[in-house]
Amino acid sequence: MENKAQDYARDTRLKFERVYGSARKAIAAGDTETALLKCRAALDLLNDRDLYGPQQMALGLALEDRIRRLSQTQRA
Image (tube, rainbow, N blue to C red; front, top):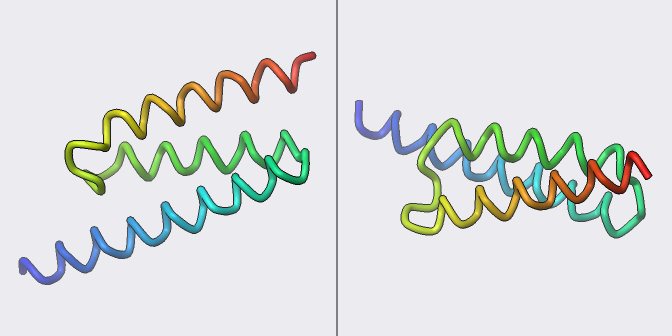
């Protein structure tokens, strides 16, 4: 049973990294709408599971800040 939990956590972490990587590419390309969507999806994945231990809270706060800034940019 423990292996299933570890596999799920690993898969979720890989999914988070792929989604956040897509968000970074969208940011670099100036695609605010896609970046915002991907950042929100990454935050949802991050909130779903403890993926990064003690760094998780700081990572979540950084993502929330990025989402806030992207939202402001989109409105401007």
